[in-house]
Image (cartoon, rainbow, N blue to C red; front, side, top):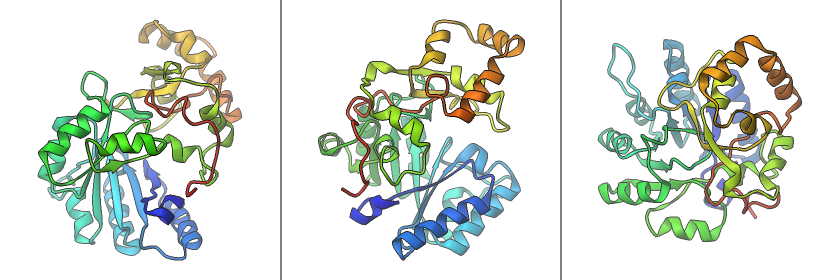
Amino acid sequence: MQPSYVGGLGMIAAGHFQDISKLEKEIQIQIFQEEQSADLSIGFIGFSALSTPNGWKDYEYILKHHRPKAVQFFAPSIIRQPNDDLSNVQLAHEYNTQFIAQVGSISEAKEAIRHKVDAIICQGSEAGGHGLRRELGSSTMALASQVSKMTTILVLAADGIVNGKHLASALCVCDGASMGARIQACLESIGNPKLQQELIKDNSCDDVVRTTMFDQIQNELSSIMWPHPYHSVAAGALHNQTSLEWEGKTAQELQNAIDKTELLDEYKSAQKASDPCVVCILSGEGAGVGEIDHIEEAYI
């Protein structure tokens, strides 16, 4: 959460939001570190966080009892409560919480604008992590530029923005930037330190792959599966032995290996060992890869 020290807005990742107690522990850590909760902001993965009535109940509990300054939703950003028509945006606004919508296309941006969100993050198809499949999304700067022309709502660009030069580029087309990999590669990050080191190796944007392969494997090991159209790691994983082994092969060939070989057991063991040669390491193909060369404090 250190970005909030210098004018940034740090996010706690609630993610799939399956364990409210875990989120509340992280909230308490932030309050202890910063000695105040005015900048508490939380990010949610929409399709899973609000997939059940209990998810909606817990979401409202967090809004009511912790009063975050902002919430961010993605995949999708706008969700309506079943049998009620109340949206996650409206519920946030009822508790005076600002709503940030992360989008990957003009159509998603238009929906966010209709719902009167307070800010829009434009995640390009070359960004790290999950996102809209490439054929449905847009590149970061083109998307941010066009969305900025459509609205007076705050618009931020998200992909490979890790230093002042990149921020200056984003400010040419929109209002600011959302940083992921650069914050992941900082001393305050609670991410896996072994995998964190992979981000500062001698990589380039050529070392990043967009693929559904990692999801196909990981969906077999998880109770939460990424749905269409968000089920491809959006340009968003470093090449390693796994990606190179399956590059160019079909999903059916991979499924045959999953069903008939020890691939899943080997992958599960690699997850426990945080083996960077095997597991998925999220990172975008933009300027971030190859331009992060050391781990430093977030607020320097």
